[in-house]
Length: 118
Image (tube, rainbow, N blue to C red; front, top):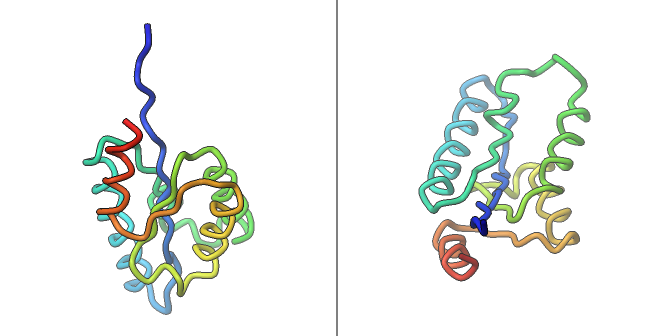
């Protein structure tokens, strides 16, 4: 049986903020991008939702290292608006680029790629 494998797509963008409301807005922004990824026919890996409000549970570096490990297993990365203000997202984009994981800066380009790789 030759089934088509769904693409795993990592959503990168800012998580932290000056206030809890800023954190919540960043989570919601990532949710919107993740929803668009799911609607395209791919699987969204959204670390914002995976560890939402886990601050202080473990050292921040543990989350950052874990996110890179998740990204390593993905087929593509897509960023949220304002991703470049996040040191973590910048590191994730850099890692993806070095690992030759496709990086997308908008949903239109991502959907065009999805159409090509299906």
